[in-house]
Length: 139
Image (cartoon, rainbow, N blue to C red):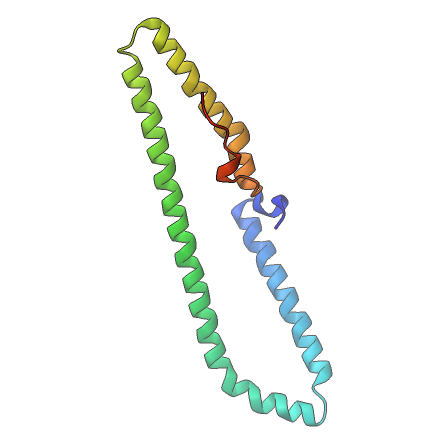
Protein backbone atom coordinates (compact mmCIF):
# COMPACT_ATOMS: atom_id res chain seq x y z
CA UNK A 1 0.00 0.00 0.00
CA UNK A 2 1.35 3.41 -0.83
CA UNK A 3 2.23 6.11 1.68
CA UNK A 4 -0.50 8.54 0.63
CA UNK A 5 -3.15 6.24 2.09
CA UNK A 6 -1.28 5.62 5.35
CA UNK A 7 -0.65 9.35 5.85
CA UNK A 8 -4.33 10.29 5.63
CA UNK A 9 -6.24 11.25 8.77
CA UNK A 10 -8.17 8.35 10.32
CA UNK A 11 -11.56 9.64 9.15
CA UNK A 12 -10.35 9.78 5.54
CA UNK A 13 -8.84 6.30 5.79
CA UNK A 14 -12.24 5.06 6.93
CA UNK A 15 -14.07 6.90 4.14
CA UNK A 16 -11.66 5.75 1.42
CA UNK A 17 -11.78 2.18 2.76
CA UNK A 18 -15.58 2.20 2.86
CA UNK A 19 -15.85 3.70 -0.63
CA UNK A 20 -13.37 1.17 -2.04
CA UNK A 21 -15.18 -1.73 -0.42
CA UNK A 22 -18.55 -0.45 -1.66
CA UNK A 23 -17.19 -0.04 -5.20
CA UNK A 24 -15.74 -3.57 -5.25
CA UNK A 25 -18.99 -5.02 -3.88
CA UNK A 26 -20.97 -3.11 -6.51
CA UNK A 27 -18.71 -4.40 -9.30
CA UNK A 28 -19.07 -8.00 -8.06
CA UNK A 29 -22.84 -7.59 -7.82
CA UNK A 30 -23.01 -6.17 -11.35
CA UNK A 31 -20.94 -9.02 -12.78
CA UNK A 32 -22.95 -11.68 -10.98
CA UNK A 33 -26.26 -10.14 -12.02
CA UNK A 34 -25.16 -10.07 -15.67
CA UNK A 35 -24.02 -13.68 -15.50
CA UNK A 36 -27.15 -14.84 -13.65
CA UNK A 37 -29.43 -15.73 -16.54
CA UNK A 38 -31.55 -18.83 -17.08
CA UNK A 39 -30.02 -21.93 -15.42
CA UNK A 40 -27.25 -19.98 -13.73
CA UNK A 41 -29.80 -17.70 -12.07
CA UNK A 42 -31.48 -20.68 -10.46
CA UNK A 43 -28.09 -22.04 -9.35
CA UNK A 44 -27.12 -18.70 -7.77
CA UNK A 45 -30.48 -18.46 -5.98
CA UNK A 46 -30.18 -21.99 -4.62
CA UNK A 47 -26.64 -21.53 -3.38
CA UNK A 48 -26.77 -18.04 -1.89
CA UNK A 49 -29.11 -18.38 1.14
CA UNK A 50 -27.32 -21.40 2.54
CA UNK A 51 -23.84 -19.93 2.11
CA UNK A 52 -24.31 -16.47 3.62
CA UNK A 53 -24.31 -17.40 7.36
CA UNK A 54 -21.11 -19.51 7.20
CA UNK A 55 -19.38 -16.88 5.05
CA UNK A 56 -20.41 -14.18 7.52
CA UNK A 57 -19.05 -16.19 10.43
CA UNK A 58 -15.77 -16.85 8.61
CA UNK A 59 -15.47 -13.16 7.74
CA UNK A 60 -16.14 -12.18 11.36
CA UNK A 61 -13.53 -14.61 12.65
CA UNK A 62 -11.01 -13.38 10.09
CA UNK A 63 -11.54 -9.75 11.10
CA UNK A 64 -11.34 -10.67 14.78
CA UNK A 65 -8.06 -12.58 14.40
CA UNK A 66 -6.52 -9.81 12.29
CA UNK A 67 -7.57 -7.19 14.85
CA UNK A 68 -6.07 -9.27 17.67
CA UNK A 69 -2.77 -9.60 15.77
CA UNK A 70 -2.62 -5.88 15.03
CA UNK A 71 -3.40 -5.05 18.67
CA UNK A 72 -0.68 -7.44 19.87
CA UNK A 73 1.90 -5.99 17.45
CA UNK A 74 0.96 -2.46 18.53
CA UNK A 75 1.40 -3.32 22.21
CA UNK A 76 4.79 -4.97 21.55
CA UNK A 77 5.93 -1.90 19.61
CA UNK A 78 4.84 0.40 22.45
CA UNK A 79 6.77 -1.70 24.97
CA UNK A 80 9.88 -1.69 22.75
CA UNK A 81 9.78 2.10 22.34
CA UNK A 82 9.20 2.65 26.06
CA UNK A 83 12.05 0.30 26.96
CA UNK A 84 14.52 1.98 24.61
CA UNK A 85 13.58 5.50 25.66
CA UNK A 86 13.75 4.53 29.33
CA UNK A 87 17.19 3.00 28.80
CA UNK A 88 18.46 6.11 27.02
CA UNK A 89 17.13 8.28 29.84
CA UNK A 90 18.87 6.06 32.41
CA UNK A 91 22.15 6.40 30.48
CA UNK A 92 21.82 10.19 30.51
CA UNK A 93 21.02 10.23 34.24
CA UNK A 94 24.03 8.06 35.00
CA UNK A 95 26.21 10.21 32.74
CA UNK A 96 25.72 13.10 35.14
CA UNK A 97 27.99 11.26 37.62
CA UNK A 98 30.88 11.05 35.14
CA UNK A 99 33.62 13.62 34.58
CA UNK A 100 32.55 16.50 32.30
CA UNK A 101 34.45 15.28 29.23
CA UNK A 102 33.05 11.75 29.42
CA UNK A 103 29.56 13.06 30.16
CA UNK A 104 29.56 15.30 27.10
CA UNK A 105 30.90 12.43 24.94
CA UNK A 106 28.18 10.08 26.21
CA UNK A 107 25.50 12.72 25.64
CA UNK A 108 26.78 13.20 22.07
CA UNK A 109 26.65 9.44 21.45
CA UNK A 110 23.07 9.24 22.73
CA UNK A 111 22.12 12.29 20.64
CA UNK A 112 23.66 10.70 17.52
CA UNK A 113 21.80 7.46 18.23
CA UNK A 114 18.47 9.28 18.50
CA UNK A 115 19.14 11.30 15.33
CA UNK A 116 20.02 8.13 13.39
CA UNK A 117 16.93 6.34 14.66
CA UNK A 118 14.59 9.20 13.74
CA UNK A 119 16.13 10.14 10.40
CA UNK A 120 17.25 6.74 9.04
CA UNK A 121 15.88 3.74 10.91
CA UNK A 122 12.25 4.84 11.30
CA UNK A 123 11.81 5.84 7.63
CA UNK A 124 13.50 2.58 6.56
CA UNK A 125 11.12 0.59 8.78
CA UNK A 126 8.14 2.55 7.44
CA UNK A 127 9.13 1.63 3.88
CA UNK A 128 9.99 -1.96 4.89
CA UNK A 129 13.65 -1.57 3.90
CA UNK A 130 15.17 -2.16 7.35
CA UNK A 131 16.71 -5.47 8.32
CA UNK A 132 18.82 -6.53 11.26
CA UNK A 133 21.79 -6.98 8.94
CA UNK A 134 21.52 -3.36 7.72
CA UNK A 135 22.39 -2.00 11.17
CA UNK A 136 26.00 -0.78 11.23
CA UNK A 137 28.23 -1.97 14.08
CA UNK A 138 28.96 0.65 16.73
CA UNK A 139 32.49 1.69 17.56
